[in-house]
Length: 442
Image (cartoon, rainbow, N blue to C red; front, side, top):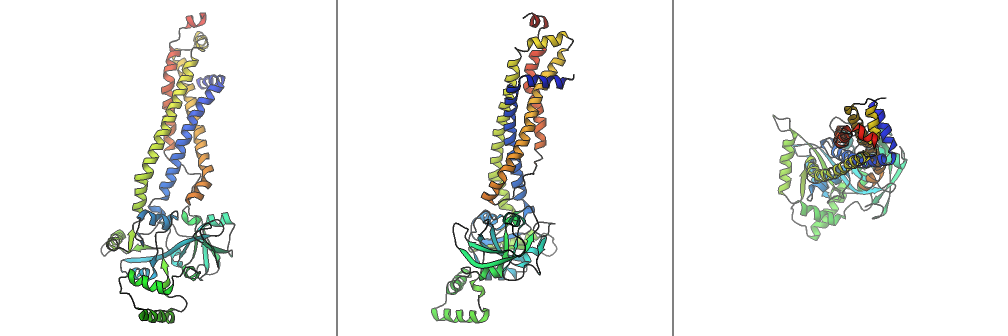
């Protein structure tokens, strides 16, 4: 019979006390694993691989809110920009690709965010080296009332090619259902990003929805104010409105707005770094008071470093204390059992067991409780993430992979092994020093 088997039988003899002490370790490890996994998911979601654009241009406001609303769809948009601003930006020689997006509505079923955009959106890699793959109907995203849906939208709503959907202005609780219907002509393959929980509709159709076009008089005044042009008197305004209707027909460009513009920039001559052009463009926008250009990486890194990082360290510190207290509990449990086991230890010694063997058995018991509790905690931690996934996704809109694994989890078991040795050493030393004759006569 080897030492581990003897130690395991000893643990089983004190089943209730052993189970409680091991479970206390499991609870600490469960919380620690949950924190590590969730933080790892957030880190992978909010890093540079999540978006393949150099700059996000939007209305003046909080840069973090602009990124969260445009890329991750977990924050309300700041404000809209005139469509003409997008057209002018598209002509800038430093801009390689400019993709407009318009937001604010949700699906009637499932409350998934609606994003109006152009077909070119799907020609750009959603992350470096990762192209959109679409199961499409016909020519795909081309007609005004065409829509592409993310994989999670398709799964949770049971939608497929040909499904008709309606938009709700501002969400189910805040607005009314628009009468216009969009048809699903494409289902996006899973990406593990917010694209999976988003519905993309043709921007042209988005503008044709009742209430999405700005009243013409108000639109003309707002555009001239935005671009610093002198206001028109009533006669000039009437002439302008007549000319616009003749030129554009149903909906002049002046009545269109965009929530944000996604930019890929062209590197300057003798350089391959597009970030230089992006920084220059962002600096120019910063001088004005109408719009801003944000590198999507910077606000997210600041969020992870300044807010989520300290929170993670605090939670890990607290859970480490829980594990340490649990280790002390194991020490107390084994140490208190020494007086009841003195005769048992003496018999083992009388039968030929060496002092080192007795010490090893006690250490093995402590290690079994620590490492066994850690294994249970590992399973419980991932189970907690799995159970919390639907709630987190509903509340935040983030995609949670319940099978995610943090590399730091590999460090837990060497640490627990060391803790087991540490808390088992003093009880083991007590067993090591047991006097055989006195214990057998007592």
